[in-house]
Length: 270
Image (spheres, rainbow, N blue to C red):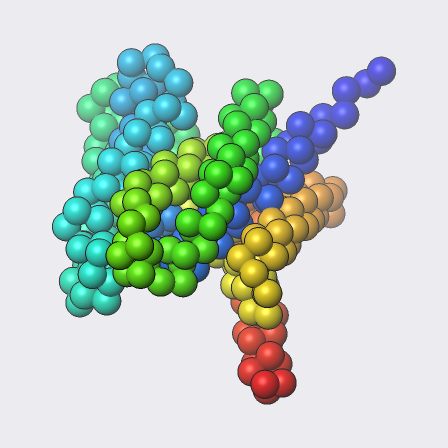
């Protein structure tokens, strides 16, 4: 029986499409979605070092991404949201880690397809990529299953959650870790740049009108799965024949007017 060549990339697109919006929704509720953008760029130095040491690049990417996030939170005053210099710190760390990653590639004499890392290459997906994405999805589901109520509280009232004795710092660290794992697992599908759209756009459409965080998460995952699968199928059509990752990113952009219209409709109905 002839191998269905598109089955593996399609499965990866669907898994990543459902996974990324889960992390994005949690971060958006906590007003920390920019952290995902930082993590997605901060994984590059870890990827380069892991490749030079002939280790799993995914492990290096997760370690580097979490390190970048911790550094940014250390200097931005994460416990005091709204401070004027926070965005400047986040952008500086993002640029610094991205620059370091680019510099390490020639310094360590390694070969890295930067275009594939940044924008994905679904058609080159391997079974290991799918396994990594499934493990990241499992980690996210376990986090939600064990800490769902805590994340609801932190999202609604972080100061109240801290006063009530919840381990807010630990909860944020766990979410940062799973976010880094999500970004690395989505690297083959949409790249470390375009994954931000897949995290943010479905969450923007899912949150308005949601009766609970659980409902918003389910909506976002469904929307992300549809967008990711549709983008892949559209991109591989003979008359189109375009890279799937950027196509998925463009479809995420199309969601913005829909999200804005939904918010206006809900506001008018109040």
